[in-house]
Amino acid sequence: MLYPLLAFSFLLPLLFIFFKSLSKSYSISSPKSYPLIGNYLSIYANSHRFTAWTSDLIHNSPTSTVVLSRPFSPTRVITGNPTVVEHFLKTNFPKYQKGDESHHVLFDFLGDGIFNVDGDKWKSQRQLYSHVFSTKSLRTFVEHVVDTELNERLIPMLSTAAANDTVLDLQDILQRFALDNICKIAFDYDPACLTPSFPLEEFSVAFDDALILSIKRYQTITSLIWKIKRLLNIGSEKRLKEAKAEILEFTKKVMNENPSDHLLSRFISSGYSNENYLIDIVISFIFAGRDTTSAALTWFFWLLMKNPAVESKIIEEINEKPDSPTYDEVKDLVYTHAALCESMRLYPPVPVDSRTAVDDDVLPDGTVVKKGTVMSYHISAMGRMEKIWGKDSMEFRPERWFEKDEKTKNVRFKVRDPYTYTVFQAGPRICLGKDMSFLQMKRVAAGVLRQFKVVPVVDREPAIVTAMTSKMIGGFPVKIKKRK
Image (cartoon, rainbow, N blue to C red; front, side, top):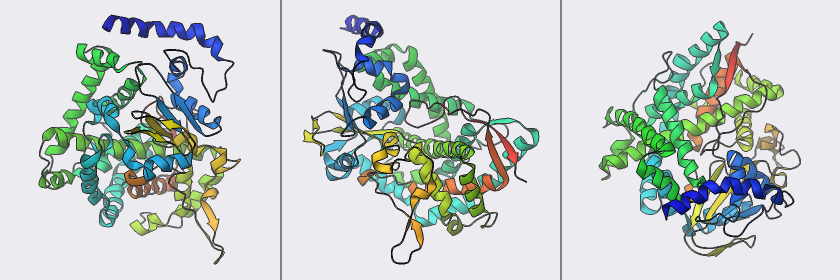
């Protein structure tokens, strides 16, 4: 069984070259499907730009939904239709779970953490996580944790870079900033990533590698290939194992620091004492706090470079606040909030998310879904759809987030339907950390933009890593300029 499968996988690139010219005549909304291999040739040809390719498919589909198939794998339905998204994230939530395949693929990285489980495990974790996001915790987070990291580490680092005219990788800096913050607020542990010595470089590389390699498992023609590589400890699976070992080393340091004072104590007191399970909790929380917020801020600063008028309005709003704004003053940065929403509309931190059908179903657009089908909602595609956002959907325009109150005639922030703006997911699994993310991002924006101008070294649009989060390939090299 092994040798035919391996031979078939090696032949696929040759088949792709042979059939490539045949598939050019077909509409982008329906990639050519062949007997036995389905859409695999198109999937393989676009694996390096899968998010952008599937976004194009959705934009060219009359129903904003496409169906992809490949051998030895479940059918995948990808949609940008808000009605369909609401159908499986809310209305029929019990029918669509993370599923066994997704759990198995991501288990070596995320284990039984909240992003990789269903049912009672998910419910209990969500309930215990919610204590971190109380109003009291959020106020402490902004006025103590974020402010300390900002004023004692980030701002001095940027000042030094400005004085020396050095190039910084802002993406890496923001990831370090976010990791320090999330470890402090959730685990009462300071990894001190954002210090001049730049510690934990191996951990950062390992974490990024684990993310990318876990996602690449989905792209193999059959799960047998990555399972065999894992069994033999070769190639990408060998590196994933090494990366996980480095992540575990850091995770255990977090767990052993003040164990009675942080989030894990709630899990332990609730009966969760298994060390492996607690490790999964820590890794999932780090993933949520480190990667998503930093990715959002990275693209935000890049967009401001391209849109100086928006930057000027943000600075004007920021300058109306004190140098160290309080929790309530940070919340009141409404235009900055709108600019961040707009940035994440165009560059969502998580570009695509998925569920698995645990029963047969029919979607509102008529698509038939069989048990085992993977249902994906394309957050990136939805953020750029003309039918949702209008003819200027590709423009960075924070003003679209405001509307006039018909009674008072005052302008107010326009709250969007979560099934249209799916950046923070929707339904029962909607993101618990939404408010914390916004508070952190607005405080960083206020602290940085008040004093500095971020100038990208490269003017062209950065390429996006094909992974769980929308990170820039090669980082975000910038120079820091002091504002006059």
